Image (cartoon, rainbow, N blue to C red; front, side):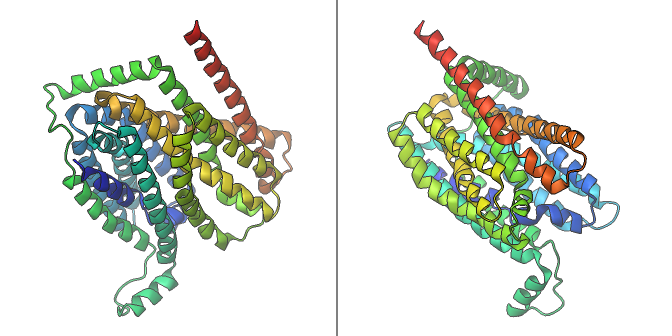
Length: 425
């Protein structure tokens, strides 16, 4: 079982290192889609994840985590093949819808199952300490892979640079320069992801299920009872929803913020790579914090880090406002580390993948609601001041992030106090 650990890390790296991420929006538009079609693609992807997140986790606990990881890797190969070879014309949009559905299903199948398999592969003795080491190593490799993918993906998207590279490698003009090179590169990395999945072994041997559907439903209900009955897990997920939704909301509009503080457009790619470097630094910080502080203490520290960054957004200081990348860029990998560490430690093996899927479901729903609330707040600002430019409107709407975080944190602390009081009584 010990080989499952490096295979898990390698699978995560190959599965998540998507070379097209830095150019995703413009790539779809350059293929000939409209903004409305691009929005529909994102909606299809998000809806698919929400639909399959929890059922896939329950099936992983029932029929085996390795089976779901292999299925996720196969779906990744299929989604990238569709993306890479979808022809221009009337079939392009339907095939890209298929790509988004395959991608969302792959994300749902891998979410939780890979962590549960890796955690259960560790020896019973010193499990918690060893899992923290695994998470630290994973964060470092993932950050390094993300850094490389951001740089190479952006370079491969540029046709002139791609042509020069092909010429340097000895290829002549018969090799086309296309905006899909980042997609081809991701298709190439999907194959080692599949190889890693196939090489894994199921802890405890193969699992048998007489009635998979009935068993999956039972697992979902058992996971829901566990999540809603255990105050530690419940508070942990509430923290995750609050922290993740507002940080991801900023990251969605990061390029708009950079424009607001007068950062040149060409710097965006380097800023994206900076998040990878911060993730590498966060790995060491997270390991030390988890060993030296309790769960409430580490989440208070992460919360203060996020609140500091969100408050800094509101000032939108030209050029110097870039400092907010530091606290916000550190907070996301720290939160992911602590969330994985405590959920795996507090959850029994038979429900681990199911509960991890509840985590994915919760943070995606939180992100969706945060996006709707932000849109409503922006719409109200527009109605109250119709003369504002888009840039000025965006600057004023940033106030919603720290205010929302402060309100959510107050409610979260009140909930924690209530649980503590109920426990002592």
